[in-house]
Length: 259
Image (cartoon, rainbow, N blue to C red; front, side):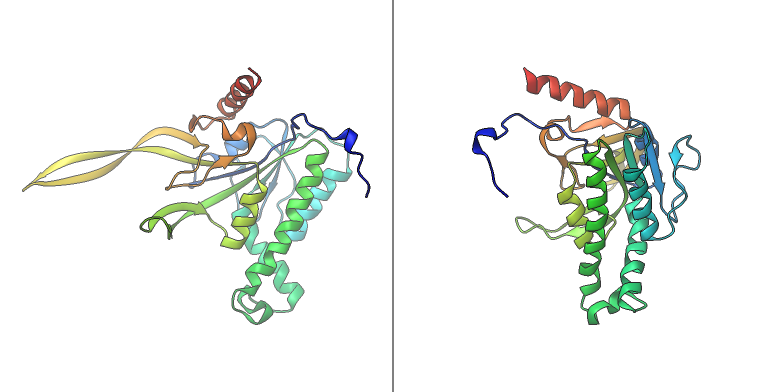
């Protein structure tokens, strides 16, 4: 490949975003994604988050190959969808493992390559196929939203003591690959207040009081993931869990960047 250095590009490039939306159960992740521009959902076997939503969806993907075939159809057939939503990557992971096991002729991901975690590393190759398929759609003008559940794990911070944090509920190799690939990582949770009650004898009881306030967090904190490239890194830390609020924050960030 030859290059003409007189034609190098210097202006910013805007592409459809690749979003990872993770959060606690039943918080409204699917509802949030349904507000994206012209979405089409890929429901994965085991998920029922869109049953009550009036959104376009393909038949439930019961294998990893089903998910790839659905993405291939979006790439090859004419349509007016602008956003593809995978709901969810957490339930897609067992299907990824099943595809690896069938290819390797074993009945457990733990047995792939003789064990020692090699199956989970092999599975990253399947995730890269998925990311490549989504990037093909991105080149055609489609954004992507990957919904994921979270789990609480202990994080061994090398700069301080270990602490618990919410993490994407995937094997760490797959989670790392998807996080690096994404342009925007969002975390959804309900706001909790801690109430202190005097219990006598110089003791205090702490009680978490949940408020009916569902929030979207856009930046990483010790307790949860988050972050973004470019404009997505300039969003307010906390937003209402509504697509309109997210979209407005992006517009405001873009206006400030253009000043």
